[in-house]
Length: 82
Image (tube, rainbow, N blue to C red; front, side):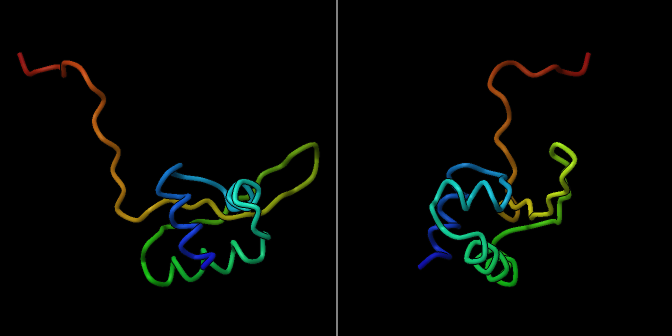
């Protein structure tokens, strides 16, 4: 059940860190990481390891996004070849 909740949250909000997903969905970080590992093994998401430093403290996590996601082009006129 947590896997679908995490996947739906990623579909709605795009690329996120694992601890941001855990905070927003009220799921423990261990369950989120297990869900992300399962989704990555299935090929539904792409994830990479990220190390950040906040106030001298090192925090390691995963940054995730949907696999094969390409954002829509921005609206408006596009420059043409002249």
